[in-house]
Image (cartoon, rainbow, N blue to C red):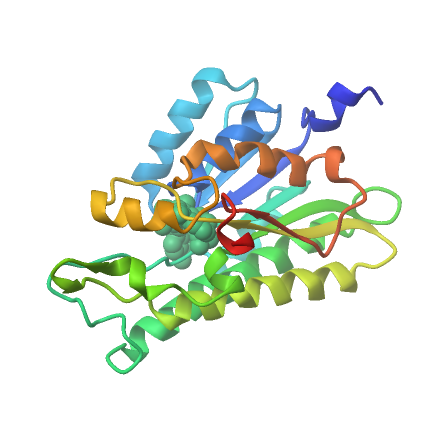
Length: 270
Ligand SMILES: NC(=O)c1ccc[n+]([C@@H]2O[C@H](COP(=O)([O-])OP(=O)(O)OC[C@H]3O[C@@H](n4cnc5c(N)ncnc54)[C@H](O)[C@@H]3O)[C@@H](O)[C@H]2O)c1
């Protein structure tokens, strides 16, 4: 294999959950640009259709849209089984709580609702479990001894607790990043290692990608405070993660499993 072919995904089918998301659509676009047939999974059908239309303009193979709720086992199992072959799974769908005006304390541990905690565990962990279970049933049948690449999305907040100081403005604390986010993103790292180890002796590889915060129109005060915590001195652009995703899904990372690739502008190294 020539070096330039290491990143080629021609002929591979890649299922990407949360494909309508800020990063999810970049992951899907990057895999499609590398030649994969991408299957866009999201519960927001209209937004996913729009992402598919954008990707279709440049991709060799038109994307497929699969509008489903990943927490629904009755929907996930049959939808994935019907694909018959899955080479790549990216577990990107998640509930990632954001600032809500007028609800400054809502994310704090002592104010957080049980309903939100449960919803987060359901999407971020149970949804990834169901998708992985369904895709692994197919991956086990592929190649001589099982073959596939799975990428689980963690976060810098899964490695360390959120620095709540960056959500503090001149007028006081604007937001608390809730604990469920760190709990589920740390859980994705355990899930990655457990599934990787389970498939010892096969070619089913399971790795995690740990991004730092991406710019999405946040206010200047926050962007400055976030940027100052990174070695590179800025937030990520959503496209900054495309290369890492193609690497983890392709033969370029073929001797890598059970690992966590941190792409965070140096946030965790400081
Ligand atoms: N955006 C960031 O700055 C950042 C930083 C670190 C880690 N991450 C992680 O990267 C991943 C992608 O982030 P993003 O910015 O694209 O998130 P996002 O919030 O923009 O998108 C999440 C997507 O998941 C979908 N979704 C939610 N629940 C679902 C369900 N039950 N079934 C199907 N789809 C569902 C939503 O409709 C949405 O399109 C997440 O796992 C997130 O935790 C993001």
